[in-house]
Image (tube, rainbow, N blue to C red; front, side, top):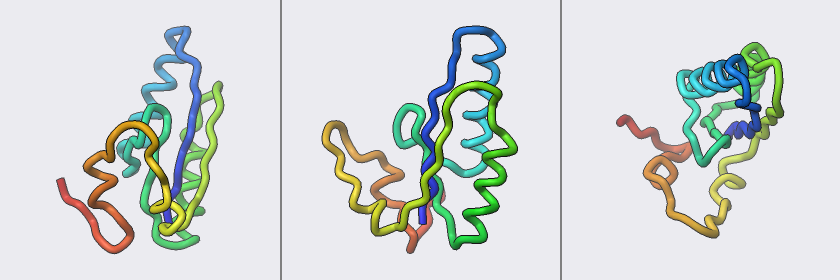
Length: 102
């Protein structure tokens, strides 16, 4: 299962930029990979872990902006079609059956 996080955060003022940077750093430290600008994904094993990571997201929300999360099965995630661009290294080799150590 994958947990996708989509966000749109304001970065006009100094405090807003700081909130954006802190949220993005949290995502990276928590094991999310950037799929594209403001779209991050993380591999999750089971419903219990899903709830754990949803709670962690809620605990690190910035005060402003729009943040959404979506859980999809590995089969649904694998059906993503790239219309423009190239497949990133992480997308080529990471799936639910294997892990990549970089």
